[in-house]
Length: 87
Image (cartoon, rainbow, N blue to C red; front, side, top):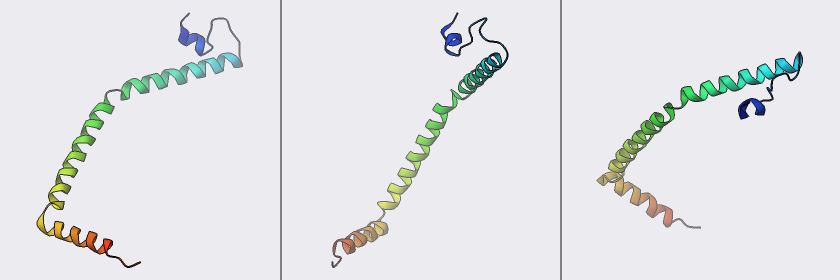
């Protein structure tokens, strides 16, 4: 008898009535979870890759904006005012 069957408590000849219904429900839940895990297994990598590409594109666009002349001057002004605040 396999380890999976023993873990789920589905040994042959064990229990009748309510116990068997619970065993079948546990087995059905385990099978559905197993099928769902296999169905989604390949999507994680592709979703991760798309997320990384989007993050890199956003970072490149933000870098271009921040390093432009006018934005750089504004950022320096903001930091300068923050450092010269009277307390």
